[in-house]
Image (tube, rainbow, N blue to C red; front, side, top):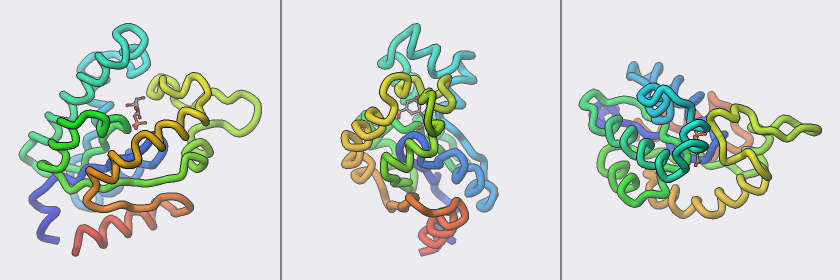
Length: 182
Ligand code: S3P
């Protein structure tokens, strides 16, 4: 367990891949602070992600997202960071992640993400609409498209990939802990 003592662990992956759930428990297990980059954005601005998207646009949100990530990575005390799903779009974010953290990609099939994020049948409004405005229209199609667009970027930044499709939180945690020990 030498490496994780000195470096942040950052979880990346699509919306619904379990970054917050896994990250909270991983931080507890490692005795570290847990930092959620979007929670930082919302705390700083006093607005939800959806409000920022609606009033200022996605690009303005991406700037705040990058600042929150940079601050989390700059902190001296090693933490576990849940990085918002879109951070990998920005090459500078990818560089910072690689420089400042062990990066774990929680990879899931889009169908699994949809199963987790969208109520089954009837209304297809996504869960947590204040946090996930991108899923307001055609959420299933959007999850498929974003997964296709981003897989190579997650792969580029990842030090390890943990498949979360059909695996429990405990199994995912075990995989990450075993990898951190190597
Ligand atoms: C986004 C993911 C969301 C949130 C925003 C945009 C994305 O965070 O930052 O809705 O572009 O994938 P989570 O990955 O925590 O759901």
